[in-house]
Length: 440
Image (tube, rainbow, N blue to C red; front, side, top):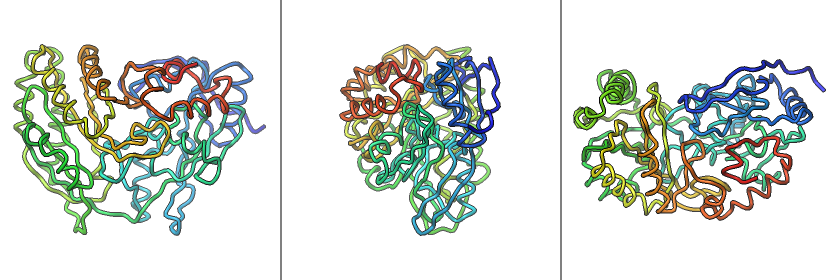
């Protein structure tokens, strides 16, 4: 055995949104894979469960534990760039923002990204973080190999050729199969995206949704509840030159709609809910069309400083417009007051066992509420709509579904649970959330 990993005891942990907290028996920050293996073995000997946590951006308790909480941030950095194979091997605790910047310096890029880059690569992939794309899928779908420490402390290497059945599942493993130590991603030469943002009416964007999806590499839009207004974003590859967003239009997007001013108006809405529809109408009308060109990750991602709670469901893409119209009708006829836009994105089908896009072309609808605002009634009503259309909830966002639901929603669900039974029969990596969503 190697040197004992430094540990702290009785340290409380909270997620980013402040909705989940836990007090693990000990918190470890391994500086090497060997130290992580030792920490897992010791936890098993002590009868403690193990969970790794990234930056806590999940809204569920997927990473909560009263046992050993592993912080992988010391396991960070690019380990190998293979330009011939078009891959990069990166340690699990690396933040996506650091990976993006390092890849850009090397003239490389991931093919697609979610809309934030604060998470660790292992945390983001474990829960299925995704952006939007016609052909390009989630971050996890870009994984070409991975290594993870299993319940008995063994380091397992996985790819399509090596332990392929584990590879199929562990790319989105929910922390249920082991602690990931490294990920190898497919990368490509650095490229530019031109973003075209444009206000559009709800009826227009929903009527033409299929056309917008077909004509753009990356299409998404936001609907402002209590209005008939949306903001659309189309990202497509560009030969350049780079022309980043101007200071004024950047301020409108980053501050009015996402951060400083948005924080203030949400605080007002939380204190005086009756103001929300009027604020929504003003905010949605403040938008104007803009076009800018920049390197990919700067276009895919945006700063998000306003704290919120989120539910997101993946639906068959053909069901998205119908479900969204039902959601709008629900808000219009109710006394709900919703201050956050509703986000709509897409992803192609992939082959990951528990990916929300597994085996089907997918559209996503995400609903949000400002932190501290009662969200249960809105989310409950939205979830009723989403599940009626065969929805699969994002693993890291609020939902009430259980293993019985997922056994119906995922054709390969039993494949995942059988693999879990083989790799972790004693549930060293278990917790209450996994018991609910995967079963005992």
